[in-house]
Amino acid sequence: TAVSWLVESEITAGVAPGLYRPNSVVNRGQMAQFLWKAAGSPEPAETYSFTDVASNDYYYTAVSWLVESEITAGVAPGLYGPNRQLTRGQMAQLLWKAACGASA
Image (cartoon, rainbow, N blue to C red; front, side):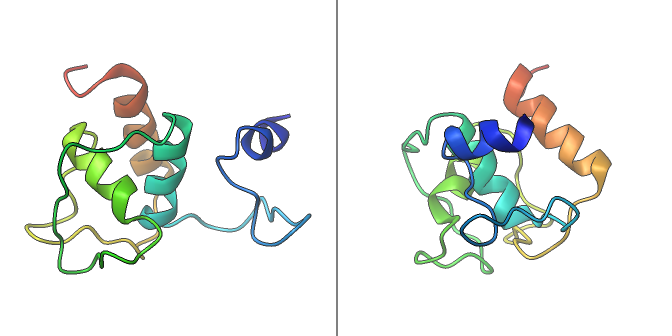
């Protein structure tokens, strides 16, 4: 049911047509994209630069939205860490902030 919701909501289509791979790990770039799409793909008022996020990366706008929404500020000054794998605790924190707001 959850995977069907992700696909129907166009949050993700999986790793290939008809292939989801539920046991694959998720990285910070992917999670940014998932959260941004789940929020309706809002346009951030401004963009934020990280040395490890290029303007042509698929998660570029999503990362700017996450920073603007105060869901995350990255992993270190100037670094977002898009290829870093998320722990379940980190994923819980990002989901909680996205659902409850930065001041929660």
